[in-house]
Image (cartoon, rainbow, N blue to C red; front, top):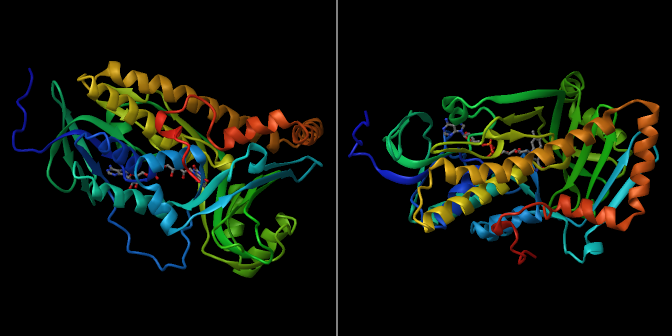
Length: 414
Ligand SMILES: Cc1cc2nc3c(=O)[nH]c(=O)nc-3n(C[C@H](O)[C@H](O)[C@H](O)COP(=O)(O)OP(=O)(O)OC[C@H]3O[C@@H](n4cnc5c(N)ncnc54)[C@H](O)[C@@H]3O)c2cc1C
């Protein structure tokens, strides 16, 4: 029996659950298409930080993601606040002579990508949502449950008024409640690695270069921040080593870090707060069900060695907004499984390719076998001398390969 609609509850076209980078971008892109959007985030807004403080969570943002953020109306605010950029990348192996370097000039491009704090991205997108009259931000408000009606879902929050929506987007991260309530299976495999993250000041300037050294326990990356002597580091290592690194006094951590990085940027002069994240590969068996779509970490997680997690999520958000926007323009049901399957086919294929590529890199660089060490040393150096192969890798790193949503193809970012 079809239950009657709760006539008193507000009606939306789309409810986006999760106010991380992916959920906020999805809400801004859908809102830009004149759909009535509810943006639901569980946490309260954080107090404004000191201007000099850098957020611990820092993303390497691809050119494609910058295009998506511009399309969502948030890139100018990112530029106004703070972003670094990287024009070059250097990658080398601790146990072979293999090394490779990339320069955006080879592609006649101004940058390979940008380095932006998570907080800056979220603030810029949040500001954009406040400008869109058809977007209602509900915060703090956490999704509790929903009930399926014939043409919509009746959504209940732990806080705030209930409402209804024709489509519910789960952008609520790796522990997604939307995914759990929808009963979508989720495969997760830990890498037995943790990533220690921290912002540091170094003796030598970074020269707008992102650097990564592959150590046997995992990669150590230095990402250049807007200050020429400041970098954000991501040190993937064993859980025991991560615990050791977190327990060290700042000075001792700085000297272990500089040694592990072969003093490429000289001594480490200042060390900010440190945190560790468990690393896992995960994927949802399905991205969509009738009236439900998953995006970002709710649908997939990958190793951060190429800094692609949030970038893939932004591509999900753009693809979903494109598919849903086109369905709405054609007067089709935006929550119908036929509409949503197009999004699933599009993004799950692309995300699987990236997951497999990252896994391949992780195993190649994690192997202690002499033959594999030789192979990766020779492979890196050979690739370094092969311009077409390097161009291909640069396009991948810039997010400019694969089947891109229209919002990611805009080329007006400087
Ligand atoms: C060490 C490390 C380094 C990384 N570096 C990079 C990088 O350089 N580049 C890159 O692209 N990616 C990187 N990533 C990956 C990136 O952090 C994630 O892919 C990205 O943050 C996922 O964003 P999201 O919006 O999908 O999820 P989240 O950021 O997890 O956001 C989910 C949101 O949903 C909210 N929420 C949860 N449950 C509910 C509920 N019931 N109701 C309402 N709201 C709810 C949460 O409060 C949260 O705000 C890195 C990851 C790690 C671990």
